[in-house]
Amino acid sequence: MHPSESVAALNPQWFLPALVVGMMAVAGLLAFLSGWRRLAKRYRPTAQIDGERFYFASAKMGLVPWFKINYGACLIITVGKTGIYVSIFMPFRLFCPDFFLPWSEVESVEEQASALTRRMVVRVRGSPVSLALRGSVGHCVAATYAEAKAAASP
Image (cartoon, rainbow, N blue to C red):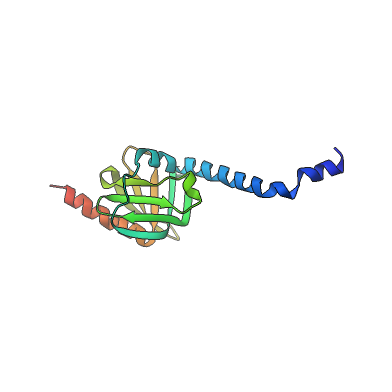
C-alpha cells in the first residue's frame, strides 16, 4: 500500500460519521444487554402517569446479576400510585423507548448495600431484568411500592 493511500483511509471527513455510527451501535448493544428493550416491549406505556418526577436519575439495569449497565444521570423516572414510568433523555431514546412498570408486575423492592452505595433493587415478575435505583428516587420507589402493596392486600 502506498503511503498516500493509507492517509486517504484516515480522511477527517469520515471521522464524524464513523463516530456517530459507532456511538449508535454501542447504544443499541447496551440497550439490549441491559434488558431495557425487553421491558419496553413488554410494558409499553399508554400515557404519562401522575406522580413524583425525578430528572437526571440514575439506575443500573441488567439481565444478569454480574453485568449491569449503568444509566447515570440520564433518566426521567416518574413514581406514581400505579407504577414506575421510565424514560431516557435524547438522543438515547432511539434504542430505549419509554416503559411503564405497574406495581402488580413488581415482584419485590429490596435494599442492597455495598461498600460505597445503597440501592433499591426492583425485581420484575417473570423477568430476569432488575432495576437498581439509588438516592431519593430509590427511596420513593420503595415507599410507594410498600403503600401500593398494602393497599392491594385485603
